[in-house]
Image 1 (cartoon, protein in one colour):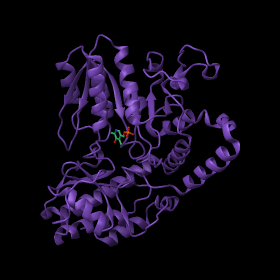
Image 2 (cartoon, helix red, strand yellow):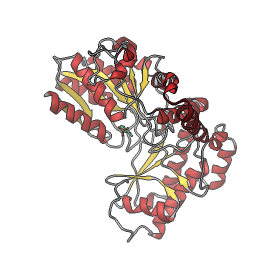
Image 3 (cartoon, rainbow, N blue to C red):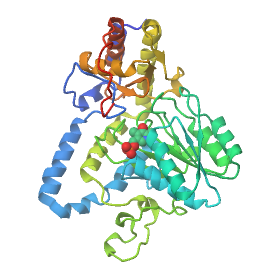
Image 4 (tube, rainbow, N blue to C red):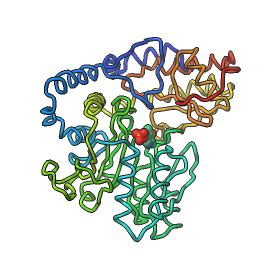
Length: 419
Ligand SMILES: *Cc1c(COP(=O)(O)O)cnc(C)c1O
């Protein structure tokens, strides 16, 4: 049975332990298990952003653009090794939603004879909404697969969809790690199934980049997107990234024509001539302060190394599930994440009919910050770079104490604007 001493021991031998001090821990008693929504603030980001504001903006003024102009590509090259991409295959800009739009539109335009997009009903809503909008706008069909909510999508689901809409599937859009259950999709097998059906593959890496190993290169996938403010600790509203496989870049036309993707951007010609390479996927002026912040978070994750982070997040979530099995099964909770560690990302989800009240009570009275995902999930994210084993233990322990005391009963159930 896991007890706090075991957790303390695991912290004492944790090779990543020193990374916690790289982050701002403003309140040591607050247990933050929501770094998969917004990663913590790296101390070095405070300095890097302050320097950019005071020196580059304050003193350098517009001249600083000489240094800023290539940040979308250079920060993209820093992300590349984390996702199994090569230099020149990743660029940073816009939000994940906008990047989904750009890449999906470009993929559809490349295969005009195919009119079906396959997506997952259990995917993060923005992924579905963007595809709904594109389908309506371009008269395409959106085929929704409906996999098991805990175990997520499998290659067989994609094979079936490709068989059902034979010769018509242009694009398959899926998340690598499911935002709700944490299920890890088999990137290689699913990409293979999409390709066998003649479709292109677009992965959303928002919950996997920086938390689990990703090898886009060997998977054969053409396209990917992801955000930088979760496991990459880029900060609120930090820009997202796009991956386009090198061999695919020339065959795609990016649908939003802006001056940052113009071949000769400062030639100021009156007609659009797209840049070659990954730069053609940019649109307009990038948010430099957020790019500088994102860069610091990405570098920290690269220094810690994804294999070490993955080993630790498996150990963290295994400990939480052991705690659940031994102390919480009679408290009305169900495990809503896969039990097989290889098929589970870096969070544990527990479902309960009163999940919303439990989450708000945890935050207000138990000093634990998880998040609630409608309708009934309590999501506990444990980014390995700064989460200690005692944090994961205490989060579970406080949740168990809350449920035993019934402290959530009677707390207001009205949903806040942000949950
Ligand atoms: C967080 C997340 C997003 C966020 O999209 P934005 O456009 O950056 O708000 C998109 N997709 C998935 C799977 C996510 O987890």
